Image 1 (cartoon, rainbow, N blue to C red):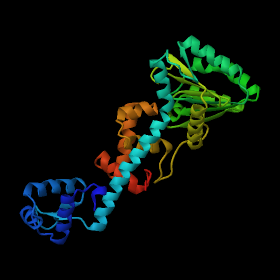
Image 2 (image 1 turned 180 degrees about the vertical axis):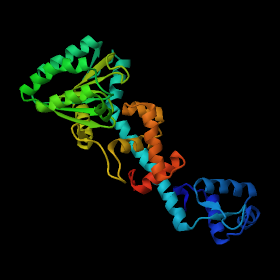
Image 3 (image 1 turned 45 degrees about the vertical axis):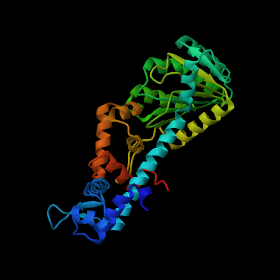
Image 4 (image 1 turned 90 degrees about the vertical axis):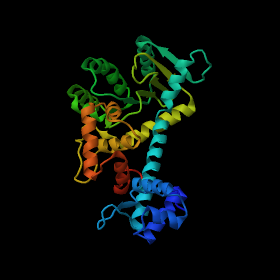
Length: 331
């Protein structure tokens, strides 16, 4: 009956028997159920891992089953945490779809790929982007992941930015939250906003991306080296997905001029992202890379969240995060 919650038939029988006969030991349980003692011990290990049994408060060395109302809540929370993690992995896969297209194009440069144009080298990439910017009519949307940008790079982009805004092009730029610690980047964003550009930040961005007039997108072949190569995407289905991705991230992002912070008992956007990445099983180092912060900062954030929930392990943290409402309560 409880197989969908992680209990096999023997473990469930042992749990039910311990509820009915709390003083039974391994031998008595095996005799009642008609199973080998080794099977009972394995079931006790499973029940212990699931926190469905605990040491007796009165008799040292004995185990007691937790009440069903507590035990079932623990099993449901555990399953919800696993489902939430799976859902987040699926969402992350959707966000990586455009990157996968680019990598495939790089591996198969001679293949016929309608709607995909490959660019090689920084000169070709910049030249093509310049041409697309020159032909812009209505809107430019961009993801700019990573930490603070180089001052010379920001200065070099200003003439083009001024020209686009002067033509009435709507410019929406998404940076990562970590750029708030970069004075040159904040100064650039302030300058851009004063001219009519829109700048927001999010804790995590899936890839570098530029979308021109919702008809053409440019993404790097490698997220590790955006200068190595890029692809131009024009397929209608691909652009629809990329625009939806941008709008989804944009709607949850925060204007760069808005101070970050949280009230007591609530989560900042960065903390919410750390929880999501922990649920996906990422290490501190991987989380640091995704947030464009140092591993030490990522470790501090993760440990701080675990302490707030009193969790001794990352699995326990996932269960408690679901109970607290920090992770989606997937039905």
